[in-house]
Length: 416
Image (cartoon, rainbow, N blue to C red; front, side, top):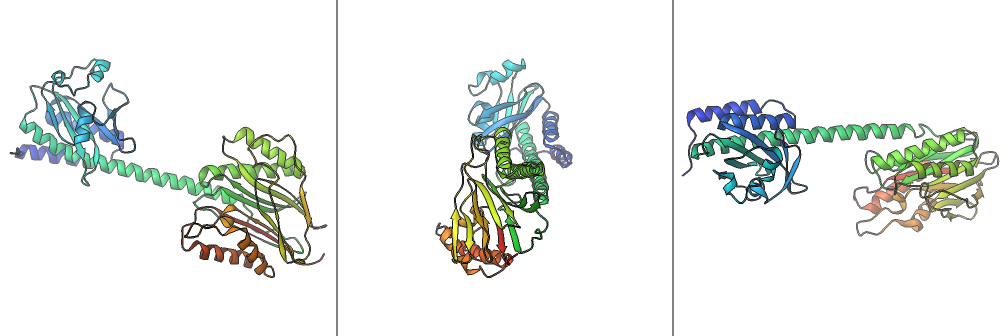
């Protein structure tokens, strides 16, 4: 038969509940729980083990001289308590085979009697384990009832603090991601360059707050810079990588480098400064508005499309070599070169376009993209971008975007 709490015990638990309702960080809350347990149960020491669902074990945060410890479920009194979710009352620790003596051996503390209670919150989820040690005499039935009431209140309080900490961490991460996104977008052109005889447009739709893609359209000393870059993955780390690559490239051109020198410079700097497996596929091109000649180098980026208005078809260019940052360059393959005639298009699209997946797992693919370019060849770059995005949405069948989508569209519209 369960032991009922006395009026004095109820008042004690209510006082503890009020104390634990105050705002605490996790460490302070654990200290408070241990202190309240010692006070309520008139014990010498109390400690709290927290449950780590990811590793399915316990780790200790509160004990004056224990430091950081981890304990598998089923090992020691705390591990058995957590595994079975039962209260364990041991009058003589050293006479119980489940007792783990190693902690006493490390600290010099002598455990006599021990009350170990599972901390289970209001949703029935294991939060941790509370151990109370060395009451004068042994823990009796009245102590057990009081301790279980205390454990219930402590579990709810700890769960609240952990949920609050997780929420704040999530908000901080989102704020950091939003800041990174703002920084990344600040490096992109605010408006398209004014180049007589040309129209151009770009689209940047990251799969998350930050993306692994980058683009540039800018008039520099060497001509019209046309860039599309795509770092492995999407998210914060790839965003930092492509933003760094973009900054390096702009600096190289600002210092007077030609296309080949800038390409090699950026590649070798990425090799030395970016972690392994963090590389960037990129097409870097320069258009001479006077001669309408395009020269480009592509590190792992492809297909790159040039729409020939006279022949009414697309010509596809493959990459010149490995992605930027994959390995140091000893030599470069010759640049790809072509002339932009009236009506011609230069079309750079990231993998998020070509590899857009449908509900059945099939991909949009290059042939369909080329059909759309042909269909929109008489339109403006803004209209062609809308056409491509509409087809991506239709083909995706309402599925969530799983890769960054970036487009750089340049069209020669008139003879100069």
